[in-house]
Image (cartoon, rainbow, N blue to C red; front, side, top):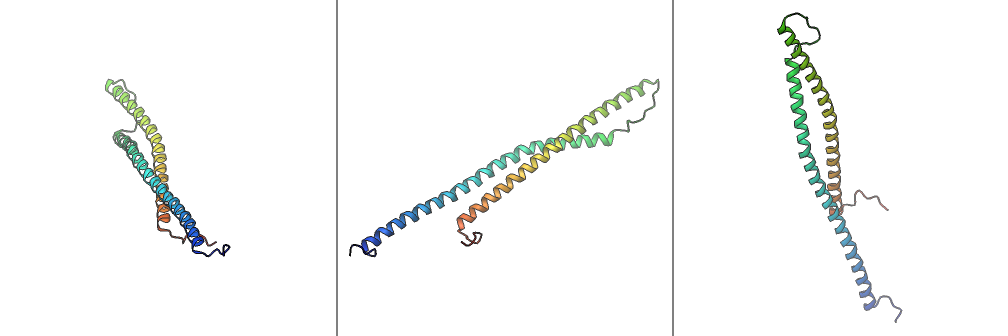
Length: 152
């Protein structure tokens, strides 16, 4: 009965091969779970540092925006001025012109920072979505939930 595949020896050998294969597959599965978890944690750290770095940008934008609002509220209309021979009026007109130039410069800087802050916020949102996706993938692999896998 050398050809009988169901002897104790052949069954033990088959079981050993199956267990070796199963342990290798289990090991690879555990490695995948660890890799996805590590990626999620790494991305979380990068996102936190990115958010902290961007806080300086947002604070600078807000400070400039506050300065601009304050100057625009304080500044009189500089469109039409009466030109007189009075020295005070000339000095006042020069100050108004200087303030108008400052306001114009602040507006340009605020506009540029508005774009930069928008880009920063969009990138931060993308990082958050990527992190959430990795965390969901980690849970999916960890739980062994097959509900999202199509039937063969």
